[in-house]
Length: 141
Image (cartoon, rainbow, N blue to C red; front, side, top):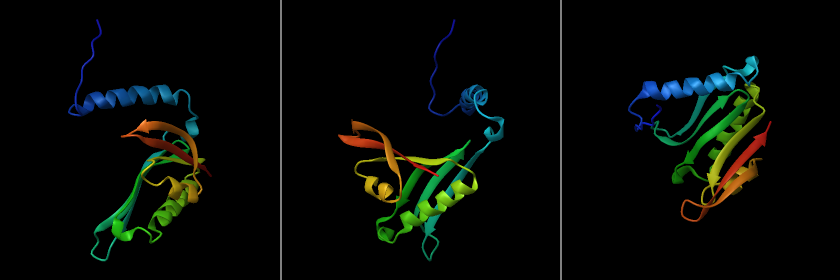
């Protein structure tokens, strides 16, 4: 008989088993040419003392790149570092032959910034995170 168990990240081998199962299923539906394409790409904005003042954390899989986090400290906002980070990650995505970049943001974060940088909304969920909207954006390359 089957049963369900729970952990809070304390059993990495169990987590890896689930990932292994999903990968096997996915690989049966994805071109062999892009199956093993996967890489983290992290960019950082550092000051003169090498202190991180912002960054972009991303990964690419198969033929798309996903921006997980883009953050800039208040002290460097308005200096076009966000656009520079997106420009660098877009160049990297093109280099990796990605067909698109995807990301998400909340209504109190950076929707207009992403639109200004060529991203379009392809989905949204209203009334989350205390009455805000969660937007899903992409940019075709």
